Image 1 (tube, helix red, strand yellow):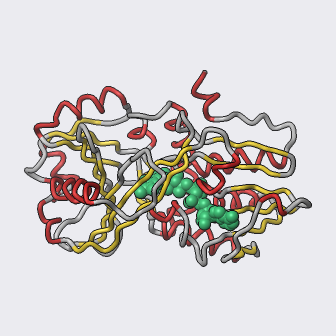
Image 2 (cartoon, rainbow, N blue to C red):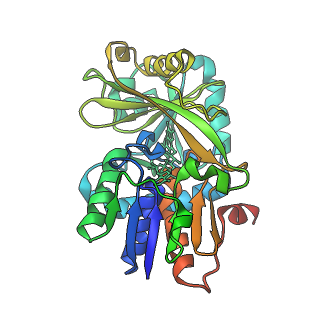
Length: 335
Ligand SMILES: Cc1cc2nc3c(=O)[nH]c(=O)nc-3n(C[C@H](O)[C@H](O)[C@H](O)COP(=O)(O)OP(=O)(O)OC[C@H]3O[C@@H](n4cnc5c(N)ncnc54)[C@H](O)[C@@H]3O)c2cc1C
């Protein structure tokens, strides 16, 4: 059996991996000239935070997110760009109520006082007196992770055609899986785009081992450490499909939260700014559908890395086994 996967974002690449593992001949078409060139996935923070995300996501995200996190660990732990160091959630003293609110909406964390926080992240010492620590979470570098999947697939003989913008309907003889993200919006009912802006900054003055989430009543933001002194600062959540570059307001909020986490970020270099549009359904949960020979997966919203592996497993099972009972994530949430 041959399956054509359209789109080499996190959804297309995890699906191709699952299909290839099951012995299926897979071919990928991607309009960008290289991995991530035109993918929303390239801009992600890479937080694998099923418990933190529960703050404003249905239970399905937590349950399936845990499984996806394990999937990434199986593939990437040895590659060195996946970190199982947990997540820290902090708030400035005037926003302390936010920490309490966050703790009521989540589970599987411990409260840390200033001293315990100092042990985990010395650079936060004396700046925050209380925090929530989600020890079982992790993070990855989305870019090296996507590159890893591409190289692994290519080594196994999977053809990836870059610079190839194709229409799923043009492959009438094969099974096709449409993983075009927001670009396939017109083929779905109810998909909207949620604009996300991010920055990458660089400094040798601050070191963190894990993502730091700074709570704020209006713009909660986070900072994810990467190699070579880099930090991804993200991400705005704006109900808009406009892709223009980062606005002044967003830049102020992103930089302001980095500065609030540590004033040494004032001297950091701004390495990159970016913006893309997350595909989302009204309940913010992804979907899989089939119409004749075309399967489609979409709506990963802010959980692309957190949910793509589990969506890939489900889709691969459904494509290969007509008797497989495909449970959508919203069905889980209705239980
Ligand atoms: C700023 C920001 C931060 C984020 N942080 C996180 C995070 O920390 N954790 C997390 O889990 N998620 C995060 N997300 C969400 C995540 O990035 C998305 O959910 C995910 O990227 C969606 O993946 P996708 O594969 O569906 O779409 P995409 O990544 O957009 O991939 C679709 C691919 O299809 C290709 N394509 C489109 N049309 C065609 C065509 N006709 N022919 C061929 N190819 C085509 C595109 O070029 C693209 O490469 C974040 C998103 C943003 C914007």
